[in-house]
Amino acid sequence: MRFLHLADLHIGKALHKQNLLEDQRYILQQILEIARTHQIDAVLIAGDVYQRNAPSADAMTLFSDFLSAIAEMHLPCYLISGNHDSAERVAYLSEIAARSGIRIAGAGAPGVRSYETEDAYGKLTVHLMPFTAPLPVRQQYPEEAEQIRSYDDAIRVLLSHHPVPDDGGRHIMVAHQFLTGGAVCDSEELAIGGLDNISADLFDGYDYVALGHLHGPQQVSRPTIRYAGSPLKYSFSEVHQHKSVTIADVREKGNVVIETVPLAPLHEMQELTGSLDKLMQHEQTEDYIHVILTDGNPPADAVRMLRTVFPNLLQMTVQNTRIRTDFTPGEQTLPERTDFASMLSDFYAAQNQGAAPTEKQMEIVRELLEKLDKEAGAL
Image 1 (cartoon, rainbow, N blue to C red):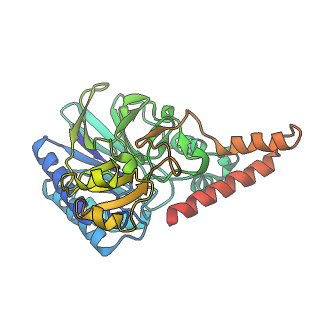
Image 2: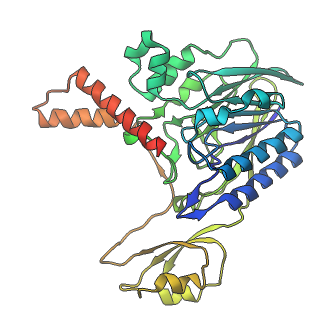
Image 3: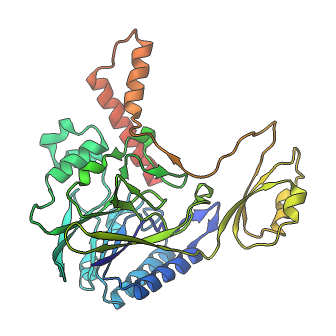
């Protein structure tokens, strides 16, 4: 079965106040064409459908049209909510959508929903796990709340109640979480101190893991644990990324062939560095532009001047020896484990003659960090 895996659509997002809805409409049409021309059997959408948990009517209409087009092609679609989504809005009308082969997991208690299907190789099960955090899992399983101190703990407990069946069949997981070791960029919303990291080994036993949350297309731990990445560049830190959708061709047990299909945006993205005089000689372009000026004292109307060459100039910064000496765009990779709570514990001990904070104090810290992370996600 050939799955088209995509994620992090972020419909309704703006880039430096530039509305991207037409860019998103353009790229979604391109994805539909890929589905038509690459013998796709089903579509996996791994969360963050919308940019905000209260999307605009235009954003909801665009996504509704996209799902309708998938249904018209008679392609099953498996969809989960991400951390940016309102689970209730994503799951709205899910019963009606199911009649068109669209399976949505969003609202409700934390858990995993499973759907069986068949192809030429036999039975195949798609498992849907919407984004979740420790607090809802503690509430769902109060008898295990004491051992849930992190996202990793929460997902481990959750999956222990929904283990992958040892039935010789093929099993696909669709999830929206941050796996330790993934490469990140500025447009993603990550928890303070990396507290939302989870281990890739939680997904041992699945034949393919279709992930959302990180915007760069990449594998984590093994080729079949994969982030599709966002279909568009959503920050200038992504300027060097090559956006794509992933096709996972799940054949007999243990045989999954991965293919990426590149996407071509309506507007490309560029970062250009140089003096104002040099940049004014640049060929005119409709790309989304970030200009880094090297002039010591650029004129007050530099933006107006630059927009005669770059009508889609979205950001301008000034780089010189007095203001900024180094600028490296692109991705950064988090270390294997960035645990803010542990760092705070070490700091506390250093300030208190080696005495570690009490478990009660650390529990308060973890709850506060989780609350801050949840509040940040609602903005």
